[in-house]
Image (cartoon, rainbow, N blue to C red; front, side, top):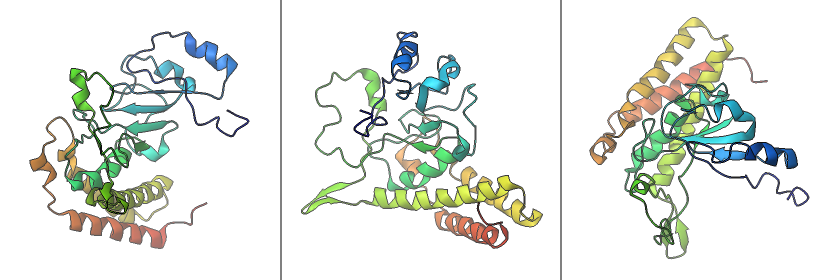
Length: 250
């Protein structure tokens, strides 16, 4: 795989809450130290299994808040040393999406991922149109928590974009503005008044969208878009103010 330029295209496996064979990772690492594992527990290392073995894991996905892991932060996910992704599964306490989620939910998703310490999100794809999500598998009762989160639609000439996808793009742009403000604040060189405004804008943006968290994620909540234009405007204005006084990026 390495000779073909594909050494980063594989992983050994994807355990959930625990490792079935704890010694296996050490044996395999001796043979191929550049190949890692991914993991998808409910929360960040609730039982410590991965916390003590983070050198074997480069990608972690979670649906709940956090545990005790040195590579994880409870905020500012762009600082994460590991690729820690938010799984927006139904029933998640950081963020939840379901198959029929309102497009506005996709706009909020990227910001929540970064604001709650994740370096991104996963399990949201381009298409799953033909019931392929469950094809060939025995569906367990908990599998209902894994929704089909597709963002492109079948058109006469092929795949077409969707309101979901366009909302997600806008959400990514706003998240980039969040990261810009957080990095400027982290540098500690902003004038006090500008820094205070930036902190308030970031806090207000998150506070006003916190209703998206948790198991009570229902369509009636998702349709509550009130104030989204004002939030976007003040975020970008704060970023513009910071850009005028922030030192140039290195």
